[in-house]
Length: 506
Image 1 (cartoon, rainbow, N blue to C red):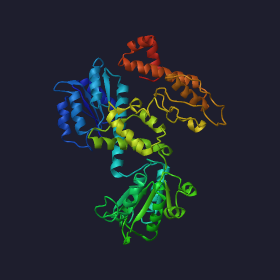
Image 2 (cartoon, rainbow, N blue to C red):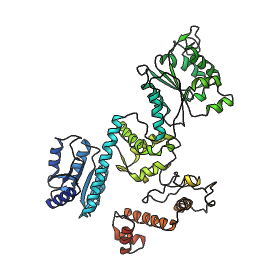
Image 3 (cartoon, helix red, strand yellow):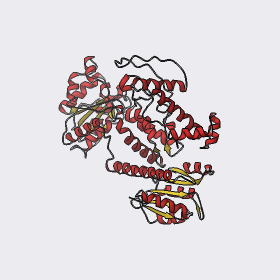
Image 4 (tube, helix red, strand yellow):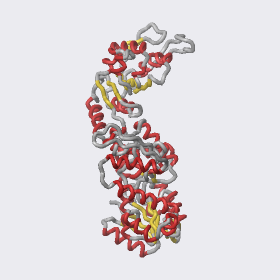
């Protein structure tokens, strides 16, 4: 394991941290000034550099904040803990703005300091594993069982030219699967051409697919090759095939049957060798029954069917995909990648994602631009996902209710979510919506979820979370000053100290 670098001009601080970390089997390396650290960084790389950097703010020969900025330029993923005097809160704010992992007030409690450093180590190792996985498997779509079935199907089809139909909701990644099928097929050296048949007007779609001759219609100044010709020797991906006009379905069937077609306005048959992969979010069997889709074309396309699961069906993939998209957005924007807290991941994991993977990617781009701090917390999530939005909660599986706040983390605030009574449950009588607004509506949502789950400690649980939310909010408004927070809440100093200990808020 790489060492923890400690930077402080105070020998006693260095000595105490070194001994405490060594007892935890965490190797260390100490420095007395930022200049020494920068000189040492000139001789290291990502593999033999520090695992975590712990630095004081005020030292002879340089500032810890300046050191933070220079280190982040070279090692953006390195967690940096800034040590500061308790009264130096402005510096702490500057540290967070500069990308610090956390700040450690002096004088500090040694066990808590070690715990904080260990958290930073875990974060560093998680980032390393995530980057390594993304580098090794850039086209990985997920590790959920449903996605593993898709991967196995792609593997089995890798040496085949058979026509494939991909079904799944909009935004679930159907084109990514189509590209993977092409990449791992015998046609990998040929072109991959994609067209969304629902996004092109009916009058232009025929020309897009089959091309046109010069003078075929007004504006056709030159001959144009269509997508079938462009994809010759490769793969043509027809997205949203269920929306293709009925008359064009007949022409498509003919091409799939013998590989010949005519350009618009043309008189000579054109031969093409194309593998067709189609995709749709619609129920094609129902479209056939309604007479909107040709049954013979359906059977021609539906040789092999791959169903791509919705993101809500593979929630275990949300953390990995989130970190991947945050890295991707940061690269596109030329900024340092944001980190996301476990609490925020809980909220994302419980969101229903009607827009699937595409929506998650857009959310990550939004977070990269809009989150002020380097670590994304639940309060930073966009309105449709965050603490004021409806998110699918654990009680959904029990009651069939809608959009309840997640109950899996104690440190989440009460959700102000729209709530409805559970429907059709045999386990419990329906719960009636009693009204309220603001935080009371969120409290009602939490109460409904817990009561429906069959728990018998609902009172204690909600009181504990209510008190935790109040105290955390008060401490945030006073920048951690407990006496002032107690005064604002109207409770005694001893009471807030006892509650902080009882609720584990230290």
